[in-house]
Length: 285
Ligand SMILES: C[S@@+](CC[C@H](N)C(=O)[O-])C[C@H]1O[C@@H](n2cnc3c(N)ncnc32)[C@H](O)[C@@H]1O
Image 1 (cartoon, rainbow, N blue to C red):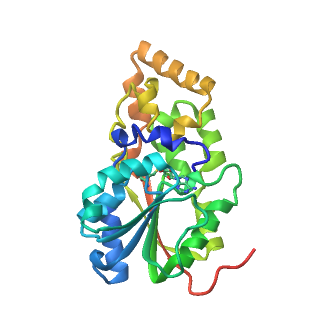
Image 2 (tube, helix red, strand yellow; image 1 turned 45 degrees about the vertical axis):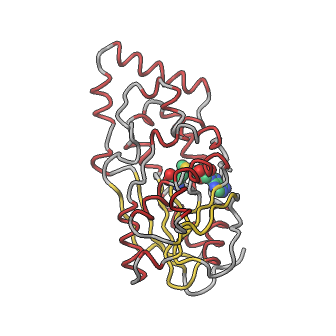
C-alpha cells in the first residue's frame, strides 16, 4: 500500500482527475528500443491504479498486459474499465500485491512501467530501500534487452512548477523531504538497483491532471481527494492553504498569483525515465 495515501478511498474519485499522459510516447519508445511491435510485448503495469495506462496501451495495440496494484478498490475500477479487453484476452492478469517483492518468475516481461508509483513506497529514508528493492525485482522479472519506464513528478515540480503546491511551502518542503526523490536520488536509486537511465523527458503542460486549473480546488475536499499530496497534509496545513486562497481572493489577486506561480507550460509536470537493466548484476548490500 501507499505509505501515505488510502487508495481504496481515493479510488472513488481518482478518474475525475487523472489521465494517462505520455502513454503514446512510452509506447513509441518501447517499440523503438525493443525493435518489436506492441502486440508481441509482454508488459507489466506495476501500480496500475484504475488501469488508465493499461487501457491506453491496449488501445494502441498491446495484447499482453498484466496489471498489479496493492489497492483492491483501485483494481476493482481497473477490472470494470477493462472488462471487454479481458474478455478479448488482452489482459494476462490482474493481480493484487504489495511491492516489493514482485510475484512473477524470472525473465517474464519485455517491459515494466511504474506510473507515479515509486514515491509511494518509502518515507523518510533517502536511500529509498523499497523502491530499490522493487527495481531489483524488476530486473529479475525482465527479459534481457527490456525497458523499464518510470514516470514521476520530481521535487522541483512541487516546489516551483505546480501552482497549488506553492500555496503552503512548509507543507510542500515537508512532503518533498519525506517522499519525493530528487533527480540525483533517482539516479542513485537506479544505480543501486542495477539499471541505467537511457532517456529522460518531460511532458510539457499540466494534462496529467484534468482539473488542474480549478482555482477553487484547494478549497474543495473532493478535488484535494484526487491527489495524494493533500492526504499528506495535516488539518492545520490545509487551514493555511485555505486562508491563503481566501485572502488572495478577497484582495482580487488570486488569478494573478496563480499565473505567476504556474510553470507547467515551461517545464511540464511529468518526467519519464526510460531505463535498461545493466548487463552485470547489481551490487549486493
Ligand atoms: C498515483 S497512483 C498511480 C496509478 C496509475 N499508475 C496511474 O498513473 O494512473 C499510485 C498507485 O500505486 C499503488 N501502490 C502504492 N504503493 C504500492 C505498493 N507498495 N505496491 C503496489 N502498488 C502500490 C496505489 O495503490 C496506487 O494505485
